[in-house]
Length: 153
Ligand SMILES: [Zn+2]
Image (cartoon, rainbow, N blue to C red; front, top):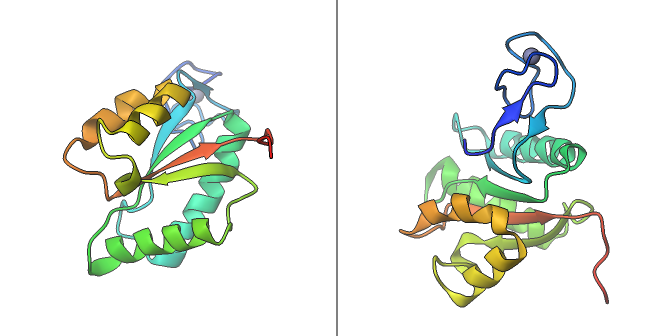
């Protein structure tokens, strides 16, 4: 994980969304970045569990002041990875996360080095170090831009 979350109580590196394994602190960790990567396919969860995890992580990300999420959902024509991906796409397109996710970009829409890719990085430079790794294609991820502000209509 590229983003480092530090425990405000003991100073150790700790997971973003869980209590500190070093001292048990549940206080909000200190982040070195406004961008994080979240992997919801890890452990091959069922689709419902993966979506539940996403909902939970979105809420906590807002609390942490995170501005952009690189969501790793996996892909594939068969298997749970593909199902998670399509469930995520469907949920986003049905505005299921509209109260937290201001905009989203499916990996396929922002191929490495393309015009939309560069436009996205201009808006959220913090994404660069994450997206550089997807040079070979990024069908397995979606970029979520979080926001509380309203865009001009
Ligand atoms: Zn700690």
